[in-house]
Length: 306
Image (cartoon, rainbow, N blue to C red):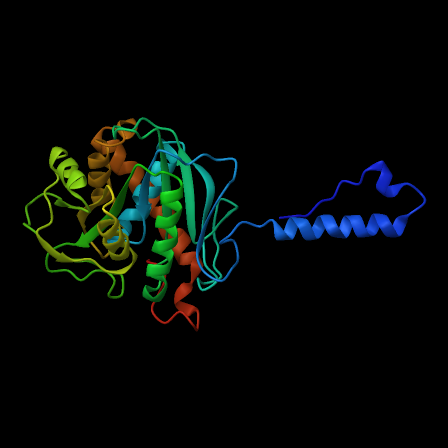
């Protein structure tokens, strides 16, 4: 952020340049001292454009998932719900990484907002939190805590976590962070749900999304679910069966169809939805290939999927 100063005529009036300099220095110091609590770089914080109101929102969290489902879904929602970039989550311990899409730099964990139709009572807008970055487990709890403290201040109405699990008999592609679930494998693309409180579980049942009976969720999505349960919040996870070998557009399309119950603005015929998801997955794969994250000496395991 560039710092600018507007000098009054009195400050530049020919007699007292020293006094003018002192006043200008005092104004700069006052600006520095007025930074809000939690804005230092000692830990994670949610940075949202101050002009954007985020109250009464449904938060959709799209962090890395099997088959890149969450990213395909996130990019689809940004386009079809006309969501605008409003900020993101920062932490000095995250990799110094910027993805570039069509000439636009994108921070690792970013936020978008818009006002599509929402069927949840009290909800009048949507905030999307997304990342292609696999958040290191050592940072997950701190980042999730910062997100929930922010959501409490902003009176967030509800939340939904977008996730996926590997098809039966296949290994996921998240270097040990993929969920392991026990589900009934059918011929179609299976969907299961998790509810942090009774209200969210009832909503999943109304959406005809069967509740996951047994499983282990890992990484930042696990931290989100656990903290929401502790706080008794209205938050759910919708998980879809996906092929981990490549970006799975059909799995993403199936999950988006289930989101129609919450966000009817995205209701689209199935085939065009799949075609668009396939186009998005190709763009995402290109971004991942350009990142070359596997060559970073400190990365260890790949921190971006793809």
